[in-house]
Image (cartoon, rainbow, N blue to C red; front, side):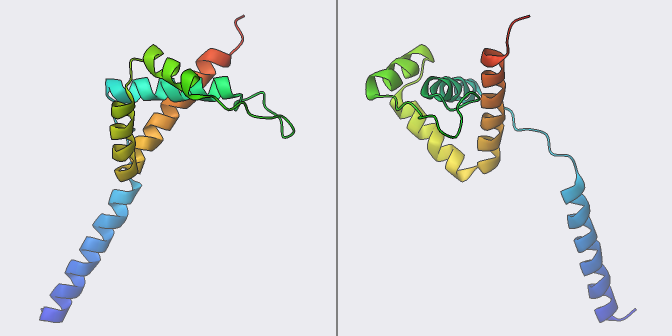
Length: 116
C-alpha cells in the first residue's frame, strides 16, 4: 500500500468518526444549584415583566426597577456577584446557557399552567 493510500484512508476514517460523533444524542448539561437559582430568577423576572405568554404584540412590557430586581435576587438567594460570575460562564459555554433556558421554560410553565 502506498503512503498516499494510507493517508487517504486515515483521513476518511477521521471524517467518518467526526460525522458519527455529531449524530450522537447530546444529553443536556447538568445544572448546579446556582444554575437552577438563576433559572428560577430569570423565569420570575420574565413573568413579572409581562413577557410570557399573555403579552400580545400591542401590549407593553413592564420594566422592573433595581428594587424589584434586588428583591428577586434575595428571593432566589443570589448575589449580584454570583449572577455576574455565572453570566461570564454562560458566555463561554452556550450549551450550558441553553440548558439554563430550558429550565427557565419549565419554571414558567409550572407557574402559568392553570390548576385543574
